[in-house]
Image (cartoon, one colour):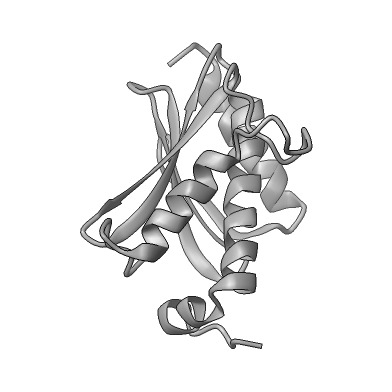
Length: 153
């Protein structure tokens, strides 16, 4: 990882916590952050120095790779690179690239950082996860109700 990248990520995440976006924010180990957000679920963001990546592991449960919802969300994540999206919603592939995976039935999102654009990457991955949950609330409220005990209304 480029020198200084972890402090940049730490500072940007702390700014979200200071603004009240995250609750219970902590760094459990160097480069491993936990906090509650959105629908009050605990999330874990990992800074992977080897891959130059930010990763939300096990973000969504009960999403095996062979499910229709997984395929839909994989497409949703890929679509965040679409140049037709407004700049504030788009992920610029010259600066970062988003991927998702499913292991053990849990959906994870990873943003690979290019050219040491860690400040940009933190903003983009936070926005991506927010948009993902908004999409789920709008299109798949039943999934949120089953997986996170969120009311469907």
